[in-house]
Image (cartoon, rainbow, N blue to C red; front, side):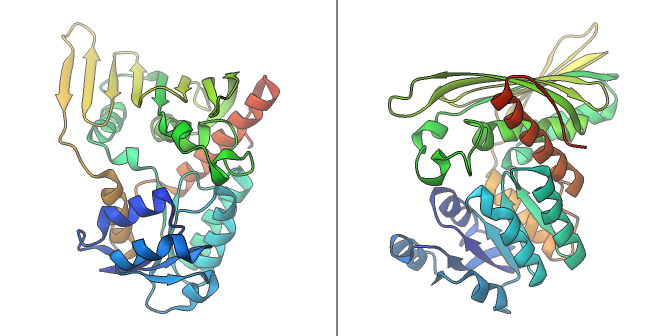
Length: 324
């Protein structure tokens, strides 16, 4: 059993705690670190968490084996560096950082310290997405030519408050909340992104933002891609990988269709899973000395590099090369 501390106990921090506390035999939270203790006190008591406002003191606690970060994005890199220096494994909510240089610092800090680094892309643990990656990598589709992805989620407007409503921590509209998951799915299939060209249309907020996003991508291996998102419509997920000999399409967490030349489409349905629990337990396995966390350090960096370039393209309106 891995003893962990949760840093940040807002809506998503509570979701992470609820996914494993009293349910998992692999990871439990024993402490929470927050800026304002009073709003967190009742939840901490219910979940058996020691309540603290001192991040550095938590890092000195020998009972704590892992630190889980559900904090504003701009704080991730310094917190990861500090936790790694203290010998603590780190699980960080997405995005890992807001620019490639910071992502590299975070990854390098954990590498030097020899501690696992996990990243909160829970959609990777959906049955549909696990099978999509397997089919894409199998060669059955022939050469991969093109990717399409769409993730709309009205929660990005519903929780448009606090640091999530500011450009310092949540630039690019809904990109850091939802679009980053599609970027991660793309990187997992096609590798690093070479160039991006983003187009965003915004409508006057009343009171929350209303915008649509379209991003055209070229990957380093000449695969093309399109990412789309709408910030105010009910949740919708689609990732479609096109190859020379066929395609594979994930629709939501549990449905997948494989299409091949001269064959009828094959439809698959997967059992629902608790993806938050799965990602934390997979991280716990890595901390305990098991298999490495399935998102590689290079994929973490490549995802943030694509995020940074997309935000720059949204700001400039032009095509942007991803930082080398």
